[in-house]
Length: 407
View 1 (cartoon, rainbow, N blue to C red):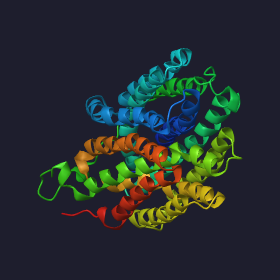
View 2: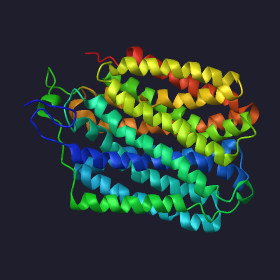
View 3: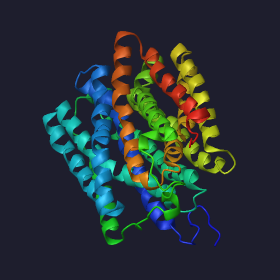
View 4: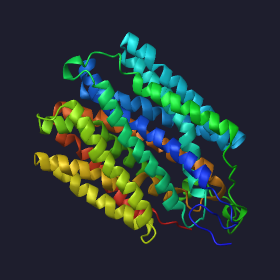
């Protein structure tokens, strides 16, 4: 029977499961992009340095790193559906902690809440990325994951938009009022509860790796670290998340410092509709363009463009550099899902473990903002963007040669 994007070779349709996964990707993007508003908010509201504000990303992405392997083990024993549901309830607990956090106005209380939220999302990320590649034809795996991640991009628009409008609603002079801070997370927790209930009532299909995917020519499973393309993918994913998180974290700083006429709230809206808008456009268009272009070639092309744009940001051409920073989002858009799909290709029975390790690579997002913040504190914000530039260079190398599967 003929297969298509959401129908496998046996004629099984996965349209509804796919879009349920896509809705969770949307909430994941919403949460991650809220951090970019929190960075600037904590700098002014709690009088911390840019390097210290990098702990916001560190708390979230270290949660992904520490919970990835336990999440993978949980999935292996209990299945994808139960793992996602369990993770969603952990996520809700983290959201609720923002209420007492706002009462105590404690920076470290907020960090603990973000860490718990990340632990919850790790279960979803560990399951959803490989699951999206299996919900249809094998040939459409990379396209399907890019499409699912496009909804993640929609969440990246909503995060800074709602976060900026709600958290900065008192204007620049009301920055120390923490009463509004829990609201975006209460919204998140409420939506997550609804989706968790739906998953309990209508579980996702238990997708299994086909036997022909598991078999190898000599019937032996090669140690995961000996899959050269997978190791390259882990490195590339580490630097991609580091680069994207660095760009996101200091977008508002860069925009307001480059053009003092731009306020924090205006910069948040610019990030939402400008940067994240292009990010979503890139995701949707990328899933379509991949019908004709090999994933590694498109990845390498986009990485090369990002390197050029980062050079413009670092050199500094006033508003032209702000435009270059915004354009970067379009070309970053396809990187995470494309690296993921290329990394787990031909991994067979090792896909769950490989997926866990690729999720662990998200820890790059925990380290980059602190390093960029330190560079900005001792030099300038523009110079800090040399870190993302280096990350895009690594991704370029992966797209040119690291993706190749070697026997």
